[in-house]
Length: 117
Image (cartoon, rainbow, N blue to C red):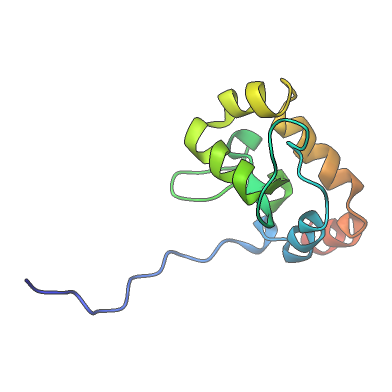
C-alpha cells in the first residue's frame, strides 16, 4: 500500500471580514449557551451558526455568527444539527439571535467594525 506523504493542499484563507480572533477569545470566557440543558463538559469553544447568513459552499460562517458552547454541547450540535440542537439544548431559542446578542455585547465590536467595515 502506498501512503501519500505530500503536504495537503490548503484551502484559501478566510477573508479578513469573516475573522475576529479576539471575539473568539472573548466568547471562550463566557458560560456555555446551552448551560442548564444537560451536563456541560470540556473547554469552551466558539460554535459557528451555519445558518447565520454568510456561509458559502466550502466556507465557514463569519466569526460574528458564533456562540459559546462547551466541547460536549458543541459535539452534540454537530451530531444532531442546528434545528434539533436549538430545540433540545437551547430551549427553542434561535442560535442566530443568540449569536447576534453575543456580537452586540462584545466590547471590541465597534473597533472591529470600524476596521473591517
